[in-house]
Amino acid sequence: MIETVKTAGGHRRLRLPDVMEFAKSQGYKLVDPEILGLPTLNHKNERTLEVAKNELVDALVSGNDTVSRQIVMELVLSDYRLCDICDDVIADAFHQVGDLWNCGTVEVYQERHACEIIVRIMHEIRHFYKPPSSRSPLAIGASPAGDPYTLPTTMTELILRENGWRAMSLGNNLPFDSLSAAVRDQHPQLFWLSVSSIENEVHFIEGFNQFVEDVKPIGVAVIVGGRALTDEIRKQMNFTSFCDRMRNLEEFAQSFKRGASPSPADLSITDTDN
Ligand code: B12
Image (cartoon, rainbow, N blue to C red):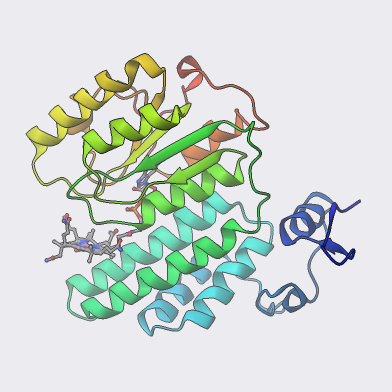
């Protein structure tokens, strides 16, 4: 019932994503996750997302990567949806860390270290899901030049991969010319842009609309999100869809599970269409 791989020495081995998929699909709870290299669960203390967020803020601010990992992993191994964990725990914890920094309670190094801890945890969660097959739809994305934020684009990649996409985040701070080259080289069905910070609005809008024009012949759908995209800015941008949180992205991504071919006309999960 669980797929195995044969090692060079002839042993059959269970892979983590296969065990995870089996346990989840059959409704089993992991009793000793440490056997799989995961943190020990604290079963007596099942957390609500709100409690988990507050505990995560404390763990991140004190630079405690072990506790941060335990909090996030326990949620991932429970029945919570990954998109809710991303929106209501990780993103909201960072909003709180930002407020603490803003009022001088948290140092810049603590904020930066918190980002390091969470990026590592997100990369670890990636390995919980089966690697997408070469027939899965391809999505690539990034954040634009002048945008130093790494968490939102990494999170987008994770949610799309969980939902069966071959998703690859190209990173942050990337100029539109280079993003056009990536789309021309890779021919993805979906491109996402996460925008948390805009240096110059006029240049950004011009560059973005030119990018969309450049990649039009490839037929890629362009989905955008991020805190910097105000209503005013969005009105001037020619994207296919806007998602304001990972929950919206999941709604969209789920409709294209299992290698189905997406078309821009299907991208109607937006909170705000233009
Ligand atoms: C970490 C951080 C940084 C780090 C980032 C490091 C890194 N490696 O990423 C660094 C050091 C770069 C930084 C710099 C600055 N920062 Co800062 N930063 C933050 C902080 C604490 C967390 C940001 C984050 O990653 N959040 C987690 C993500 C996942 O949450 P999110 O962005 O809300 O994303 C959600 C949605 O927007 C959506 N989404 C986002 N993108 C996409 C894309 C798609 C496709 C989809 C579907 C959805 C989606 O889904 C996500 C999950 O729900 C925020 C606090 C905050 N409120 O976010 C301040 C914050 C954004 N920073 C702030 C400030 C002031 C600065 C600086 C000006 C500080 C300075 N004096 O230098 C600089 C500006 C840099 C710049 N060029 O913009 C202010 C901004 C205030 C304002 N009104 O604009 C904030 C709000 C802190 C505060 N409370 O004052 N920062």
